[in-house]
Image 1 (cartoon, helix red, strand yellow):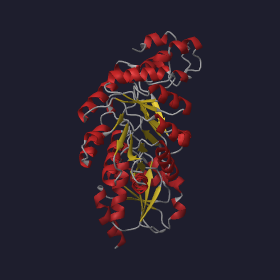
Image 2 (tube, rainbow, N blue to C red):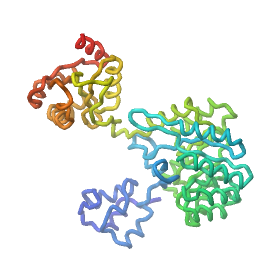
Image 3 (cartoon, rainbow, N blue to C red):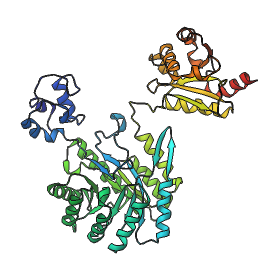
Image 4 (cartoon, rainbow, N blue to C red):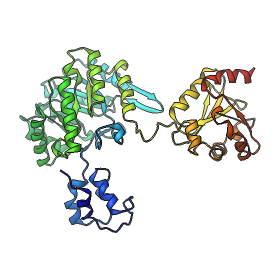
Length: 448
């Protein structure tokens, strides 16, 4: 169990200096107790207090990073059981497995599919997260396949074998890329832990049941390892769901350090070769605490729905999805094209932009930073008001782009037209449609 906020407060300097970003030491102590702050944020804490508070200041779930460079992914560090309690922190990684025993042509095709699983949705990049290489009981072949994949793509690697010879050969080839070693078992733990430590790589500990997993994680930490992923080797999807839920609750609510790690899932192991069932299981894994999900294929029909589901679940409910605030030219507009403005709530932007594009008339769409709020909500909150809109227009340079001085505002905020005209001296403010679906007809009337 962790320390209480009052127990932590007793160890703090009690200066209420605010240097940690929190107004008082008591408030900072409460955040530490809830896993919502780090002790390092306090520049005045003594070495003795740091040692005493190490347990309380540690997050209940370890953060683990796999890979290097831009394609590296981070999982763990979660602090809540349910997304709307606060938010989920690091999206689960979804990747694909290849077997070293397959032909080079088959492996290349799977890797190509993984690289092609790269999509954009609401201005966010969604892509396959990694390639997992399954062992073949041939160390030379395994190392060659791992090296081949590493050279062919930038995705992080998961070394999915408990054969120490295979792991050693593969790590000698690509160890500096920080692959995930998958993994350590009761039989090979000492050797695999030594490999993970020597190469500074994260490691999966795999044992049947959470009790056995806890024994291995404790052994791993005693060996000096901290970047650990757990696998309870469930025999069914139902047992996988049960183990992940129990582990998350134990780590977050009971502060069971031995279970405070990300979890890896293999939905295909329970699907009996049924790809649709595997994808259904993977969707359940996304929503039930799996941090790393290994699929048997990376076709768009399974990757895109899973990535979109993940995007929806891991969006911060306290921060609406936002489009970039800027000018968007649509349908190749010229200087005489109409100029619309709206807010940067992603749904608003994509609906309005879609209707303008569908109307097949060129136009400019100015997206004003309204902190991710919809038009009426932003207006009511003082975020989509004449002063902000006028500043956006002036800063955008549209006065030098357009041959006219006319701006079209959403019909829902028609009441600001007069004040906006005052703020934008020399501009004509036009009240556009109330509903975005009426934009194409509005454009046709203006063009006709």
